Image 1: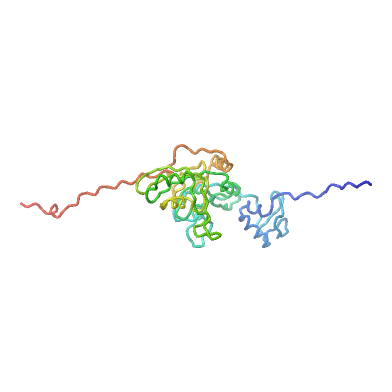
Image 2: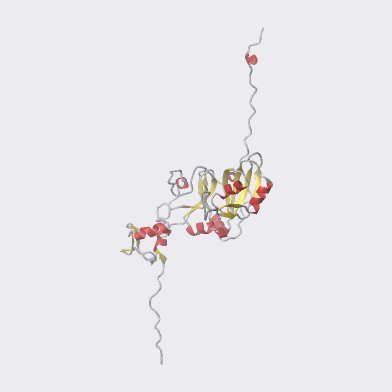
Length: 310
């Protein structure tokens, strides 16, 4: 008995990118929001409304419109360093109406088609922290930098209330047990605890409230504050001065576009490769010299003001 050979399928697998990815790359919205836009029937491909997720298309061949506006392809990728001041939140929008880092980036450059690019912060700095924050629309690089496995070094200047003991500082260097997640989270009737990765730590300025330079390869929720709280000391100030090979070199509230070399260095760091920052720290990555108190002039007494007797 002979069997007939099955003829090869003439159907080709769909090519191109998923529609929600195309919308995200064009700067229309995040990928999740782009899915909502598709499901709402606001996207047309070659004149046909698409309401199904996962369809694939080619931006170079297909005419894709969102709310009637023709897409011109992926927006140009942008990379910025921002010096975040205290009192700003690292979110796109804040329900408490506090100032956000997006307001600082309001003067961002326009994309290749005249539209302002949609920037997102890489990681977070809390409301009271300041310093180096990366802003980009390159989702792939942002995700790679944020993965703990990459081990990208982040360097901070930290001011502590009181003088921690040497034993406590050694704990931080080796790795210290802290609460995972937010302080008010309790799971299975107990706090979820985790040990931090080893950290580099050295004294920058002594005194009753010393400053330390501390380098982490992870970025857990309020990690620096929790680490010092575990050894009985409150953190008064935090300033991030380094991210990979980058060092903070702009005034508070200002931003600048990264050079091609700096972007390449970030990409290397995200892949776990070694990067070396410049030996000399820029001005804004250093502590300012403490202001010396001026000695008050001697007070004039009533006798000194009185006129000499004749």
